[in-house]
Length: 149
Image (cartoon, rainbow, N blue to C red; front, side, top):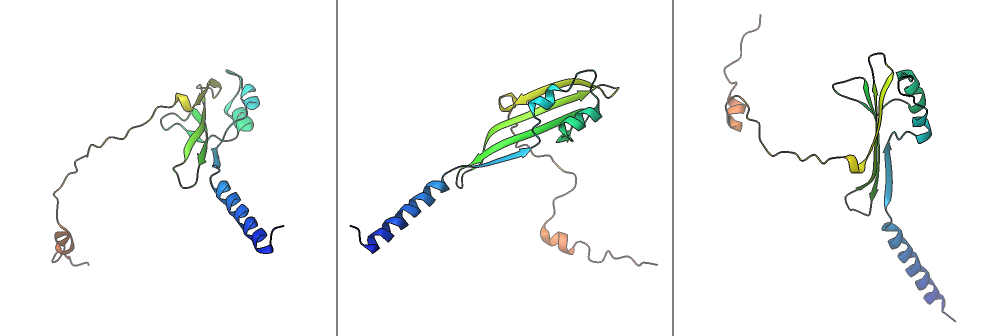
């Protein structure tokens, strides 16, 4: 029915169509430490210690900068289509706070909707000193050599 050349052309066209469709499927990347819900249920406020939490959930993704008794388990899933910018699909942060006796005080779970965008400011911090040109920088030290003893 079809000639050999026509069959090869149709096969190549089908292969090209398959490759082009698969190129548009998103690449999914999961990063971070996402604790299982069953493991979180085993943490008892007022009883579980730092060691218990480490045994159940592993080491935290981050420890709060100003309080070493606040542990954060952070995970994020992104999708990237072709060459476009990755889009955050899911984000989960589990916050575990410990009291002075290293026992669990607070367990909080936050998702993508709980996050707030951080908008950087365009203000410039002035620095002390004078502004000099590149030539002044290059030739500024000529004649300032001291004798070493």
